[in-house]
Length: 449
Image (tube, rainbow, N blue to C red):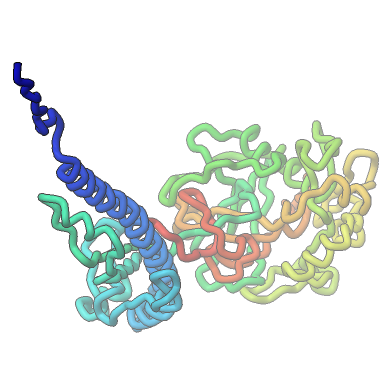
């Protein structure tokens, strides 16, 4: 029998290795594209986010600088505001601090009367309109920021990513009251009495029957119609006393005589009468000021009523002198030396604090007192006295001396007018910290958007 060899087929049941290697290469290439694209997404978005932050810094600086000029006092204020805004904005850099922020005249800085109103460049506003502008808006942008890696995703079907991106930032600022470090006292000054007054003027009132005040200033209620002697007393003896001031336009007149408020008032001088006692700590009720030193207007031993801007008194007065006295913790100097006679005569009734005529000592003022208990905020009410009692603004005052007890004729009271709380350099305001909705300090540029 003849042997027939069997030939085995060379056919195999799997694909050609060369074809497999080609498919893997394609998958690897696509994966690399996606991987590089994702890395590029992170890097490019990070760059855009950094650019946005840098542009926002420029916009904020621009808006704050521009708003500072919107005082309504200069007919050229929009030109000043735009110049200040552009100067402040362009002092910032973008693209990792590699290029200056760009702002353009009659374009980047715009103004409006209201926050949500229509904004215009200075060129689009009349001279009359320019004086009324209250808000400054700055818009900055950087166009053509090149993408580094993310466009590689355009290899994938359906993608169309631009080679460059644009980034913009906007900020709005206005002048708003700052924080204060002086607390309000329940006193209202009649606006007509300080129309021509300058800081340093003394304004007069009279302690009427039962302890009410009348004249150029009187008692007011910060939470009408509640009020009452107890609440007004707590305004004077509490650490600050008033947490929320009433809005401008609120009627705050407090009718009637409030004799007990003299005791609350005098506690700030380290003099305690009636139910009040000196506190155990500086955070207690009825804390005094750092000084009880009193100022009283005397001319040749006779009470005098100073003209606006004129101070006629036995001691050097004014907030500068007060600051010296408070720095030394000077105590109330005694009735005779203060010009308040201890004999209880008709002109200067007797002041006899608890424990006889002994006020708090210098050491007690230092340990128990709080600074600026006598540099305080007072409401300015509409018109001349008697007025409607509606708050129009806020004033900074110095409580000059204690209220005398009793006597006939009624003793005269004085406050030293230190200007409005919104005046630059007001001793009642901090130096530039925005005060929020209830702020009463000097107006400062504040970002609102």
